[in-house]
Amino acid sequence: MGRPAYSTDLAYIHDAGFSRFAHRAAPEVVRTLRERGVRRGLVIDIGCGAAPLAKRLLEAGYEVIGIDRSPAMIRLARARAPEARFRVGSLTTARLPRCDAAIALNEVINYVPGGRHSSLRRFFRHVHDALRPGGVFLFDFMASAEGRTYPAKSRAGHDWAIVVRASYDHASSVLTRDITTFRKIGHEYRKTRETHRVTIYAAADVRRLLAEAGFCVMMRHSYGRLRLLPGDLAVIAQKPRS
Image (cartoon, rainbow, N blue to C red; front, side, top):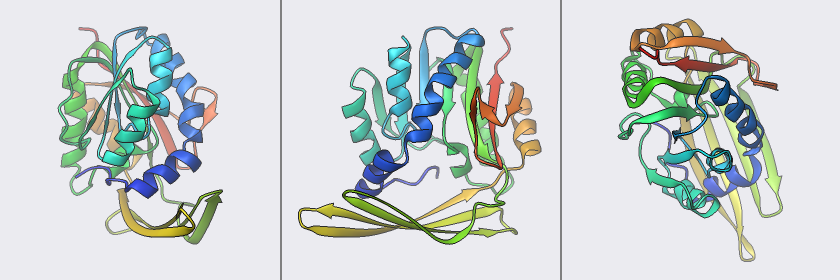
């Protein structure tokens, strides 16, 4: 499973109208990596989207491999950051090469299915095994659905529009987003629909699963000076050097 395969139109709209967070987080991510001793080497951008972070990592001197489930996102990523390597893959099953850091920006891990947390446990262990000693895993996640549901919310650009409805099921801890997009193609608008389901993970569970995988863990409400949305947490998980 893993992150939904964003369609061509939703990938375009996400990059055009919703990539500001990644652009703002990128310098804080680079600063955190350097503070933690990762000043060079290979960084895996998990759920890379259209590569706003990957481009900044390249500029900072890192090698980058980006992974995303959406072929449309990967096409955009290759155009934006041709020096990086990109491939289509699910974040829960993609092979991760030996690396110095892994990053999953913008609530990517919430797309890992819940259940008894077995998928998230495997994912954390998979990342831990790929990291070199002292390697860093940075990500943010939605720890609460409070304030994240709404009957309908819309946004538009010069050649696109999007309408999203979000609901939350307490029994399953799943937040469902029903997404309708409109993209101008020629003189007409093309309409598409997608449904995204994300699991809300309690902070205590995420901390425990990371510790079980072998990480030293720190949680914050920001990436450096960039505050996250209410209910979101940023995680710095580091693999011990010995």
